Image (spheres, rainbow, N blue to C red):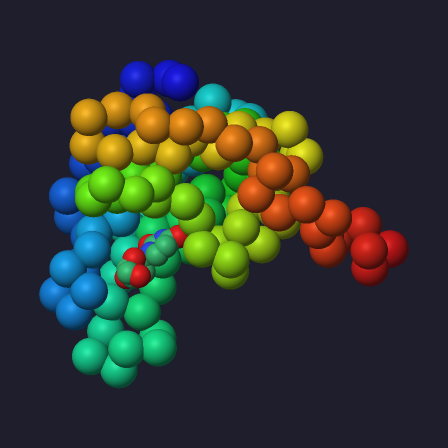
Length: 130
Ligand code: THU
């Protein structure tokens, strides 16, 4: 995995606003344009409206005019893999290819790499609406 991608995800995690769960998450996207976009989870006192790190990174990418995820890294602390939640798997799916790599990291580095299709098989996407 690109070290810049890991560093961007880790820096985003450090800025996460997670006073309720105390679980900070960072995400960083390497887009097809070569740029890196990052995001963090932003919780809210009205719990359900908190947003995930992946959603923030995708919003930053789209806002900049990019539409294609080449690779994405997600990072969280703790002993378990910080894999994207179900909703974020669908968010990633919108802008990634079946073989696009999703790197799941901890503070120490890469823990495991999945493909988009492994995380969300038989998925529904833009083609279904064509
Ligand atoms: N979280 C993410 O940011 N991304 C995920 O894919 C999993 C969960 C956040 C949401 C919430 O702020 C915290 O982690 C605990 O669920």
